Length: 143
Image (cartoon, rainbow, N blue to C red):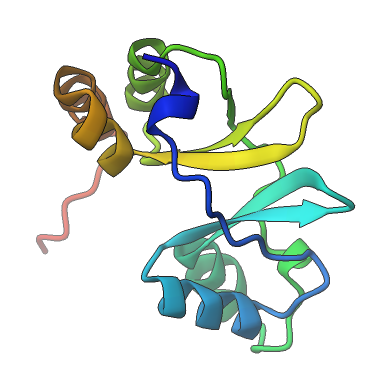
């Protein structure tokens, strides 16, 4: 199955000049934890609720901080004509739950989430979740 058959096409995009407050409100409205960041019809980054919490709030930055100042610029993505099985294995390997989907003109055409994979290719979703859930470091919160 191709990514274009499983992805979500209606994707809201944050602008790098918007504030993190605006991005957070958009995330809340959509009930998502991340947004692709686009500029001039090109994917330039991703902003997550974690970026806002760790790179902004924990560093003393306020709600008027620009998205470009805290977004992740090293964006992982896939192409709309990639195979879902291959992409979901990659999602597990790089430990992400969503990937922006671009076409070969480098335009954002959708987003592929673990949920999209689960609905359309259950075995691929199980494989991706196994990879995403593997510990990446010391996460114990016990004293």
